[in-house]
Image 1 (tube, rainbow, N blue to C red):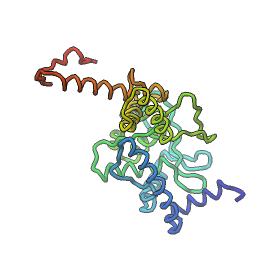
Image 2 (image 1 turned 90 degrees about the horizontal axis):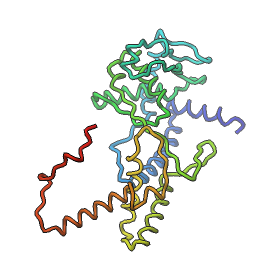
Image 3 (image 1 turned 180 degrees about the horizontal axis):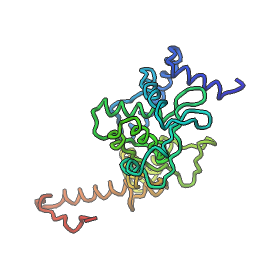
Image 4 (image 1 turned 90 degrees about the vertical axis):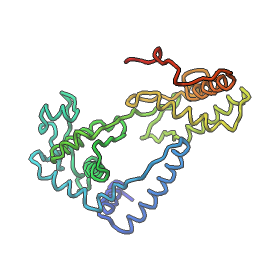
Length: 293
């Protein structure tokens, strides 16, 4: 293939149209990827109620319906040869405040399609947002998406407002999270330097087993300890901050970590088990440990 990008563009265009054979092939590999994904997250006791396929919205014409409405908006412009929406000059200060758009933030034009006519992520996300509100009769929709999607999520809310869905736009929340770094390992998607969560989990498991061997612990608990180490390391950092993993630190049995909490719980449980007093949680005064802030 001489021009890979052109060929990929052709495949995307045919897939968006719903070409039968292509749909079957791509869905087959999507299923393989999802099965692998679920195998990974199940190690951390994470589950999902269901998965939505963005392509279904394309084939049901929901994306084109949104696109047709966007194209005729007064704020539609031509940007670098493709249709776009001028959000910067279409949202007044009151609207920006209601949509949680910071003062002074320059909002780039929302590009609607590529030069070959295929749609872009944010346009498809408009259709998906409408689906989520309608499908579940939701008052609020929370999108858990990486911090780097900050601007696209603002564009999404702005576009919903211009389309007449102001209430939905105001109740669409971007719960952002920072990206993960591994100390001692330089990650680069462009260069193919990646470390999967499976690999991180296996490394943690090796460290846990080594520590258990040193302490004479029970190896049967290794998976639970590695699980706690990884989950706590993620939850202990504010979601929108970058997460830097020091694998040795997050399995430290003697400081703030998942394994440390498990160890502390086990010690406290043993003390209570040996106690001859009848203890009631209702009689405990927690006043001194409540943080009023």
